[in-house]
Length: 237
Image 1 (cartoon, rainbow, N blue to C red):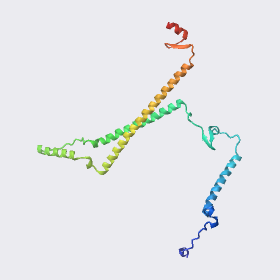
Image 2: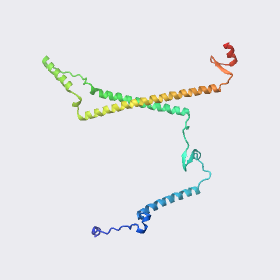
Image 3: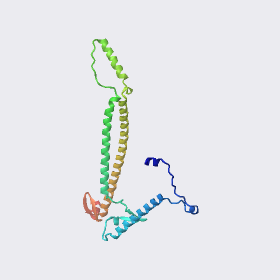
Image 4: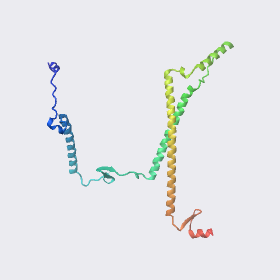
């Protein structure tokens, strides 16, 4: 009986529209719109309640370093700039580690390229295997030699099975991709090495300038010995 009751068409109850006198207020809010609005309102209300509880039970002696390392920009907390977070020695060490990683990847790619070249070399050239054929006389030997030469000349890449050709083409694509990757890694390695050398030179120049600045004015170096300026002038005369 329940299935028969559900088979009978029922009247579709429609929600009423906005009355004509209230059309200036827009569409009439339906029940599903009210549910969504009520959920959003209660969610905000619960969040505010939790914040009020945290503010009421907070510890007045609480401290953590982000209190002094952050600043408020338009009401949003943002960390201070970390541009000078590392010293020059730490930056040099990190660059050295990066160069070592790039060099390791470069060597690994070169080894893989050599391995692929060794695998594909036998397909580029004819087979170098030696087979021994036995003949009764010279005529039979000439026939065998002619057949072997024809078989070697007729064997091409197109005569290989489909799965072998597919794997070979994939290996050639992988080889080209690895070669291009090696070129990119070599460029990156050269750029990083050049930047490291330039940074070393700048650091050495700054060190020499600081050393000359800190050196006493009445002392100068002459032949690796520290002497007074007056003695150097007398020696020059």
